[in-house]
Length: 228
Image 1 (cartoon, rainbow, N blue to C red):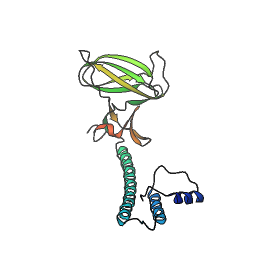
Image 2: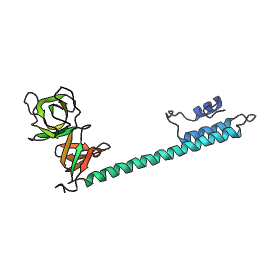
Image 3: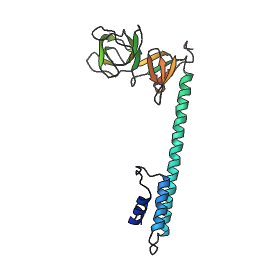
């Protein structure tokens, strides 16, 4: 009789004692209970063979080890989160460069413009689109021809109708074309002094002026704020 099979007598006995909502995942205690129940109600004339018993106890042991491993992994992940926060705090006051291509978010604050940075692999014609948190375009700008290397666009916070947008979080996307009209890959970069650290869910973010980006986006760290 396999461990997944419980005879009618067992089912009837269990249903008369209590009614519980079945779990979607069996734990080691459930597994052990099934094994004991199976042994209790097995046919005395056809008892479980030694091989079957050893195989099922081995399964129980493996399940217990897997749960211990899962607990250890969770502890390791929590430790990594702590290490990430500690590393981020150590960067406050340091000058860093970060590739924010995967997370080009920034914050618009009172009566200030936002500097949106990017880097070109070659001279190109550049346009920029700015989005709100619902990914609606609020501003399109044609920057014309820009030279190879690092550059930036200063957004005054107004939309396409010239109306000042409310303070909050926004994001931007840079598009560039070469002299032949071919699209170029763009890196959104930001350089400056880290002035704070924030936590967004399980992610640790570095703050730099109006911009924020994950610790993993940092590509360069200078020894001090003066670049020495």
